Image 1 (cartoon, helix red, strand yellow):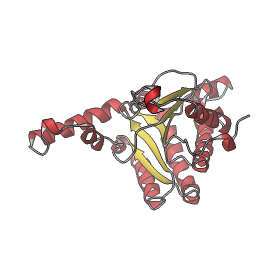
Image 2 (image 1 turned 135 degrees about the vertical axis):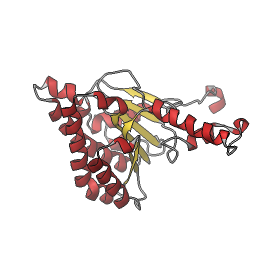
Image 3 (image 1 turned 90 degrees about the vertical axis):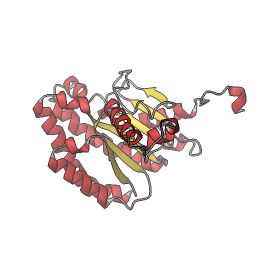
Length: 246
């Protein structure tokens, strides 16, 4: 079985993003309520974050709650928000111990006041940490992100702040939620689904994709290491040929 020691530390994905899918189905498979799956998923988040910090990942982004998730039953949404608040309170010590800075992207103003307040407090308490940046995508949808970016750029063009001919990738990047993050190198999705689900559509343009048929609560160190080793065995050409790279 592969372990962290098998990873080539000179060829790490700088930015790892994970779609943490399957909490509810995992709970259902065990005859439990969906909330049991979400609570178990939190434990896996803690372990994965610490392992990524140990491996040397610079940026870890977790798809925590999408804009579409608001459509779920109110009880489940309320439970998820309560779990978020409780988890954030508990994790400050662990984040600081591992020199991890907490970041968040998405429509954060749509979060319940208590959850938003707790999130902002933890971000403030970890702001000076210089190790890995952990980003939670909360009330996040990539299409909404792109729509807002286009609106902001259009406003600046209308007011002669930006010239249309000067709009390039850098300007678009600067108007995204992720303006302070590099592009994604490796995107992992659990649960056996082969979808991106409106997650970081612009940022994953050249990401390596790794889909795994394991529900999130079962995503142990073994599977994390496997995803990174898979990444390290890929040839990243960015439009070039193999011969050009060599």
